Image (cartoon, rainbow, N blue to C red; front, side, top):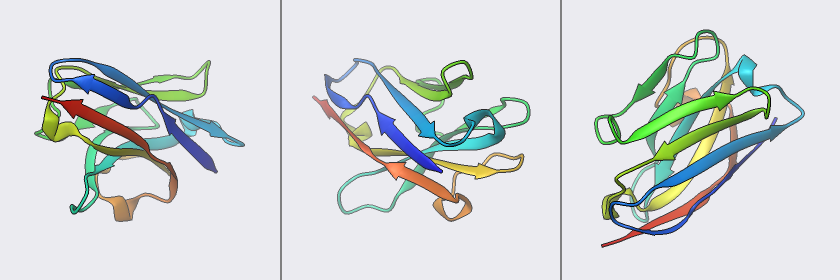
Length: 123
């Protein structure tokens, strides 16, 4: 399973970005997909997760109400819509996958990882 996160960039505080997680060789709708981020000098932290079975989504306290995770199965892509961005959202963002139901925000729970995409929010 090869995942690729894209869509990062530089945005001013209060702005929006949409990240995409695409895959080759696998159908993403069969997998739980989670988004993580890692800022310099910090541990990788979970951001959001969308389940494989029923599309339920989970958000951490820092992203609830601002970020939205969704799937487009016709494009085999999972999106992370990020609104009202803050400078503290600056990080490299990764998408990760695992089989089976459930929602996960711990990096150790995920099996497949893609290359990250840099998100920088200026104040």
